[in-house]
Image (tube, rainbow, N blue to C red; front, side):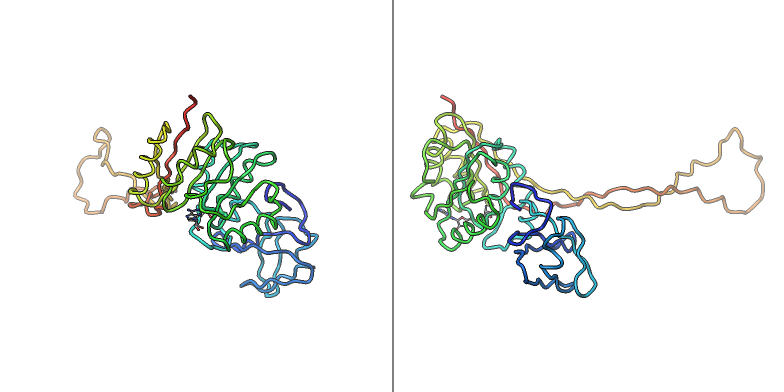
Length: 299
Ligand SMILES: C[S@@+](CC[C@H](N)C(=O)[O-])C[C@H]1O[C@@H](n2cnc3c(N)ncnc32)[C@H](O)[C@@H]1O
């Protein structure tokens, strides 16, 4: 098992994702002799996990069942232990695309936080790219480095425990892309520029407040970045409903109408059609932050 390479069978030492339902998943370090408690009962690693295929349905001790899945960055994002606020897959997908990341890309990131974005970057740049990630909180830097080892992606990443605004990324002239998720990204813009390869390359900064965005855009313009643009990604979830609509009653065709009668019987009900439709939300909650993108000039 590795976060960047798929294996069929669960082995001792793997990190597997126990998928309970659409809203609940938990990572489990698979260990010979260990047990994991779930709301459906106990999972015994030696008999229920080791040697089984990823994707298997596992029956727990109380008779309920779960699926045991191979880890992916997306499953890690919804199950990782939060040490900070994290980025979610909607933003991550946009960041990966707009930074033009691909296998072989060299990326600088700060702060590392809980490593949610980092895992997605690593999967994208593998097998030959590299991530330089900077986190100034020592325990967070140590913990994420330990997770990278457990997830067998540590050969693709260097974790530096330093202040990116003061000390930069620890590399010069190598990055194809830089990503910032810190409270004062404008202070790190000159370091980002220095870390990027001499010509071209993309930068993205994530900020929850528009005032931070304004200061970052100003710093980017001062450093001669081009194509500066900010976007916000909102999920618009449509509810699927079955509705029954009466067909409109236009009355009788006058050319075939019977002569008037003095009958008092009610007209027949018009038939109805039943169909599936979706209702969009009236408001769209879920603001996480603004993504500001920019390009380093090629001159
Ligand atoms: C919101 S979290 C990043 C979350 C991360 N993007 C993720 O998806 O898990 C911000 C992190 O930046 C770190 N940080 C803030 N300012 C920093 C600085 N000047 N240098 C390095 N790290 C910094 C914080 O310690 C925190 O862990």
